[in-house]
Image (cartoon, rainbow, N blue to C red; front, side, top):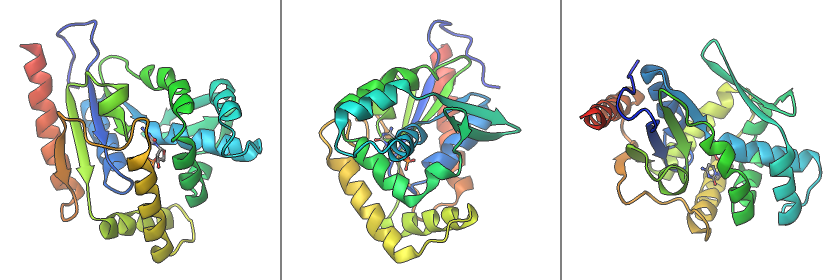
Length: 235
Ligand code: DC
């Protein structure tokens, strides 16, 4: 375990941002396991609110009630034998939030500044010793601007769609590749162009293009950077 034995008041955070399929979820989880730090999948939080909106029939343009929902639903992440189970109001929604319809809904509700604001404290509450690896779109720019290391992963849209397609097939969803490319492009456009907390690399982020890199290669780079940054904090 990489110990945080410098300023005990500051729990270190490593952020991994990037678009869908860039590898941030996989790398974030692997890095957190390797460091034995906590892990935040912030996209899952937006997905949970989207699923709750669907289930409670809150219209997608009703910002006031979406905020109310974000403030009142109970969201629990439970790690059991290395795998994370996600609960919405005590119901296991780990699989349900991964549907493509929920991806699009999540991206739409994430464009509302007040919804984002309502979810800020919850995301920051994951910052616990010995450290946190946080993955999302605005982890390094807005949620944890003081992170000790900020990574921004990119990849071509074709490669990202292929990865996402594979992931969804493995999860048992029956999806086709071509519509997925269009949906990814649409979601990227929305996430990158919204006014509040758009998907952009932080000015101090390390950019890695993962298009032709294996998970192991990306992981080696990210882990080396993490070790360097964390040990320089101790000096
Ligand atoms: O990472 P993901 O694909 O599970 O995220 C789903 C959507 O949630 C994404 O399209 C935009 C939104 N999101 C966000 O706006 N900010 C984050 N930090 C994480 C996700």
